[in-house]
Image (cartoon, rainbow, N blue to C red):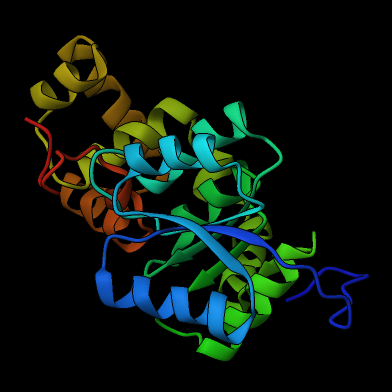
Length: 233
């Protein structure tokens, strides 16, 4: 949905960087931007590290960003860009639109979010046009999940600390306590205490239920991975 004050009649050629590791979808994005919307694509990247370097080199107006990328995920790219090039507008295009993904996108204040699975090329054009003009655009599913979470007094963001949310992402893979301890630089006994507290806060009875909760709410998408897409050793 569009933010108030959006005006489709005003046209300004926007300089765009596309970050997408799937070639076919990258080509679709390029055609939409250049042929349909008459903007300029100043660069394309297929991984997170390349994306940050490219944005710093080209200083685009708008970044079209997939979230699941090798080397550095999309949220890591957003954090880096917000620090080094805060004026660049960011439109997230993701095949995952779940509770935790929406929460993280909110926290990082992305300018727009379109879920690939439920939206059309027409919606994509509207989103690019809106964000390129300085407005915001979020898909209906994004807004529905946001409202549901914000009105739920027992949502994970109200019950769990930031560290507990990070740990839940690893529990959902699932990792054993000693593996989580290594990744988070904690004592194994500390991990055990956190696991117990997470179970209690979410009113779950077993680790199996905790793993299911993490997967159902999108936490496993946040677990750190190798450059080749596998889990970190």
